[in-house]
Image 1 (cartoon, rainbow, N blue to C red):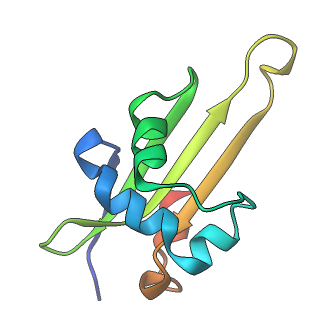
Image 2: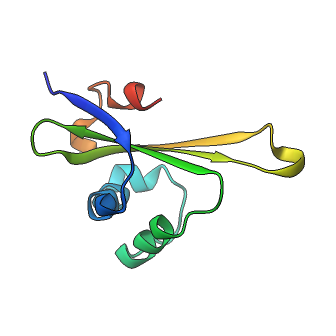
Length: 102
């Protein structure tokens, strides 16, 4: 069984996140068209909107990021509403990573 570690996102994770975000099954579920470039993903991660909190999941000794969850909070009249986004690498799905991130 793989050891799953959940921790806060760090900017040094961006390349693993870009690979994850651009994988066919993960991107399909985002409803974003067209595919973002790696630079677009890096910029989005470098400059998050206020109220975005990110966690990543790593597996085993290589500590490669295989999943990410983002909580998107709102302000003002919609402060009681939040969104949750989640990505898990295709080859790591059905191993409990999404459950651990949520």
